[in-house]
Amino acid sequence: MPALCPCGQDLPYAACCGPLHRGDATASTAEQLMRSRYAAFVMHDAPYLQQTWSLTTRPARIDFPPGREWTGLEIVGATGGSAFHTEGTVEFRAHYIEAGKPGVQHENSTFTREGGRWVYVTAL
Image (cartoon, rainbow, N blue to C red):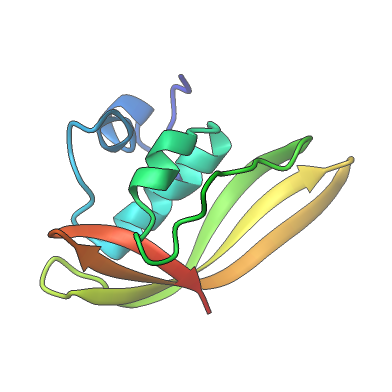
């Protein structure tokens, strides 16, 4: 387990995304879910990613690109997605290194609530 959480919040993993990944807590906002999903990609936590993916768009399995090392998350903006909303978007840039070259995955992801919990729907 990493000491600092990979999600970029500058908090210990055990106090940040760790409780979400273990199922001891749920995300209270779409951005918190986005950050926890990024950390799950860093840690190759496929069960958490499946659990937090909408039933309407969830893939049968999660594949992690071999040799890709995630190096940082940058939140660009968000709409809705608070504890008082039922839908939201989070625009982000996820930085990585693959085959010795830097790359970035830029998305504007949509989130909704299913059964009262935030879930990822799709990228716009």
